[in-house]
Image (tube, rainbow, N blue to C red; front, side, top):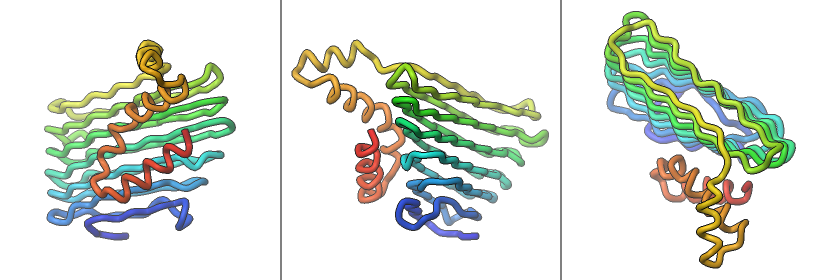
Length: 229
């Protein structure tokens, strides 16, 4: 278990992508995870007044799964969770998040974006749980996905399990194709179809990459992403 201001776990290099973290007031946690292949789990327990931001990217390919479990255990606890995954030919990528609001007056926000190409398969399974006494909860969850081929598939399962009545909670999910009108517009200005699609994908995923405040880390994530797509 660790308490720290900033941790960067690069699974491709260190062979790990996970951990167990305790977050307390006055020591905000920023966690960047470039997830490696295989099966990995991260657990966060956020106490009163604690704040945590997690940004992860699942890009390694193959048969992989990533689980994020978060417990908001003290009033004023806050979570920001941003992630992206890319599944190309032969890849099977599963992302699961479980955010549990166990006490009143906590906030969580999740944004997970996925891209699938070839016969790639992606799954987002997200649960937000609000306990019976967790009044004044704010919990938001978004799953946005793009398919690049007719044989690609992404399944998204956002879930709200709410047992309190004074809350503000929402979730949303989309799975669609690239905007062909935008691609056409860019091709009229001299870009190839591949370059136009790549530019559109970069813009789609920038909402997640832009949450990485540390510039060298953001560049590392971006380079891995560009190599994948």
